[in-house]
Image (cartoon, rainbow, N blue to C red; front, side, top):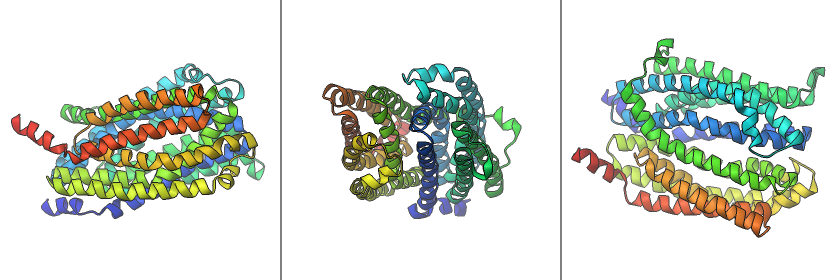
Length: 451
């Protein structure tokens, strides 16, 4: 058992993070490719699907409650050499996400239209968005189980296996997009409907593949009985970490809904520009997300193995790398803005709105890198309440308020929106850095000793 424990403790950041990078790149690439293809089909379709995706992402946060908790707790258990506990947690998170997936999928299918109307979109943009919500709402059940099983594999260090599943899933989705939009081989052009069903099929495949890999790599056979037998202590532990962590993400998504409503009032050109820029912007923090997730796994193992100084240094080292990478990537995108935007649209009004925002991203991304890396590391160390408290204060007090003030009141439009979000990211990042240097795990240790 000690030998197995050391194997988990000694995995490097590179060995864990490079498959995560490829997986995230492909996952984001699927979204970018779908937006790219839809933009050539119709700007209204691209805008409608973009808004609908924001709505569905809110419900996906329900599933991340347990998957985030599983990532931290399983990694800590492995770091401490408690392998049986890690396997029991794996079964529990599978059972919980099974039920979460059913409830959310049914809810979205029944009330998706009413929820989409809250965005105040109309005409073809609304029609396309509604098609996407109703069909892709079905796939939320598969997404729920996929997130749980991916968390189990990653926590055990099997990031390459998760990456392979994503490669095939993206291939299925992109092939479906091509068939739906281009009418290749004389097949009918089904547009948003075809794109939506391609996502459903791809996510269904992912569940089957991940169940097989969990059994093949971990010798963990998941059974129907697992969805009824989750341990109470496991549920409590998963929710204690997952709810505050998901609360931060939920607050972010809700604040983005409000900000999207501001953008809607600026016109279709600004809304389409925001959808395109959000997809381009993913390239800036792709590397940061990958090494932040890898660092989160390793920090949790360090904390579980009581290697606290190692965890502290690991977080700072990752922070420096991610900030430099984000700055360089965003700068390259800003310098080549026009050619990149013209890949999505030829509309001069959309391009004119977008170009200044690409330069604002250069300001935003280093702050986002600081925020992403250190907030995820804090959660791994058991400090789960601080990120959500600071997040809610800053997202609503800075991002939303300044977005209205700069974007609407002072007429800076989409540029004002991005500057406001940059202020939010930098503020949260600075607070996270201060908190990390205070070694929050020391407080957790003292609380446990006193108990």
